Length: 588
View 1 (cartoon, rainbow, N blue to C red):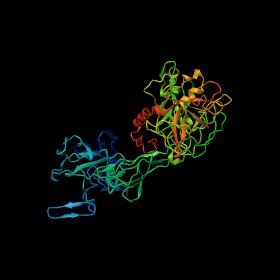
View 2 (cartoon, one colour; view 1 turned 90 degrees about the horizontal axis):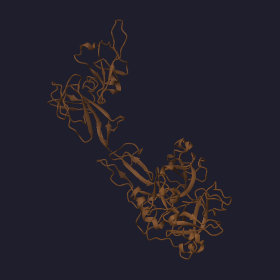
View 3 (cartoon, rainbow, N blue to C red; view 1 turned 60 degrees about the vertical axis):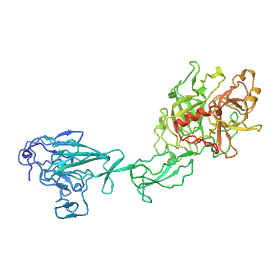
View 4 (cartoon, rainbow, N blue to C red; view 1 turned 30 degrees about the vertical axis):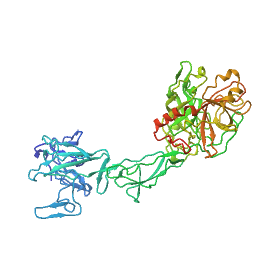
């Protein structure tokens, strides 16, 4: 059979699946190419002149009345693939439809129940009624060529009118008892003989789950088979949350499962986990000035800060201390332009976490498994940016600085004795923690002033400070430094240096032994709590007396804890635990 398109009174719009197959014939025919109209609602193939269409389709395809061929797996699938709808007719789908007469109703194994619930006019009119707007979907109307049709719910529309439906946000296409593979979430329904063709349902979903601190196990229903937590989670989906390694629960919770509800919400809030802070896997190594290199993981909170202000290859300028997965405490003078008395641009700085060697371009290995890999965020190290995903996280982590915070009291450097010499850096992204990358603990109680009394107490300092040969150390060193209170420090230093010991300082070090040196600025002095065994940040390297003395001043963070807490809460409101009955540690 040959189809002559001249017989059609109006141009015909064919679905893209039903493009007629042209065959060569013995007769001369003038055959013009198809004209593709890319409409926002539907793709048309407009037939303009006469065509010769094959009257035979392959065995795997079905021939539509209009002459096109479609795959047989498109028969009775709820989508109109033939222009006249003959792939979804009762005759073709007689084993899979619901048929109704005035006297009896017969239901067979696959009833058609369109989720676009539209009333139909009598079949002899061949018109359909546009369906109502429902919360689960929206639709657009495409009228047959050269015909007008209704445009709002309840209007009558011509045969072959097309509805293009799309599930609204929070819903997904659901067909044959499963989520559809329809990536674009688009569904087509066509008016044929007074009836709308079947359209799959739009089913409510819960948000997919991604977390840096939670390890999640998901199933499509309680005790059902496992599914990806980053996929589509329907009503009834169950999630088992647990804290990842290096994290712990903030509070006790008596539930094991969280269930996706009918309204697309979870029946319980997911608990938050806090990083394990202030823990080290190895023993302390003594002395920076004449010490040995640090054992890997001994100071997992230590960071190195580099500046690109004066060179293409960033220079090391200061140290810093992680207090959360996104925040670093350092010294204000590292990021202060004394000539112009202003804070420097955060974009000049790069922070490297897990750094054990000074060389910016040397990539250090850290013992982090693939499971906790993170992205690399530095624009400065091409090698790190090119690391494949399965290697990222096994090496030092590089971040740009998003923002630098100074205290409310202006920092004026030497003019005010380095008072308020403290800064907080916000990184370009959150860190995924590991054994080698953990924050130091912080006590958030404003009344908790550090005072060891008359007992000699040692703090631990790590850094790349100047060694005995006058050069910055190429390897990260660590030292135990004796604590010196404010009064004793003023007594032991020279008259010239006393003005540099402002109200918010204490000292550490001694006249002849280990101590902070140039290059250690911004590094954190941490003290081990003998009760819980964790290391708490107490001071930030600020300044030191010139000469052979190793005594240095440290900004006491307890004088600025309210300000630091305000920044931490602005990043994550649940970050600070106000309960003073427990060891107060960072909750990020």
